[in-house]
Image (cartoon, rainbow, N blue to C red):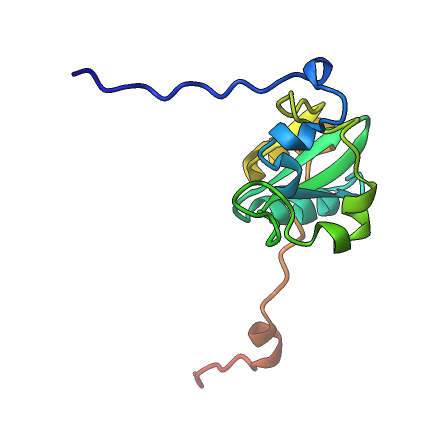
Length: 154
């Protein structure tokens, strides 16, 4: 007997929804598995270095959409139930109440203008845009400034 392959789940498109149906009725809670927050557009090496720190953490990425920069953190909402519904739907946060399916990614994969998933990607991007980094001048060690030089008598 051949092993059976799981059948793909066929979900209706927006246009195929019946009156009274919602995209959420067929979704796996994509919008409840991450959050994005806007960040300042980097302009200096220090700015890029600060953003590089975000990317040093698991399950993060930086993306640019319509010239705005965002930090995305992949993390499941604690209120997302196994059936992809919200455990506190009637008392959910304002950002959830105001979110609509008009712009949700139900049918799409993310399509950003730019995406950075690793610190090295961001650093290479900065190297193309910014002037070369200047290394700070070497400073004498504090010990060299404080300790007297001892010479032996001749």
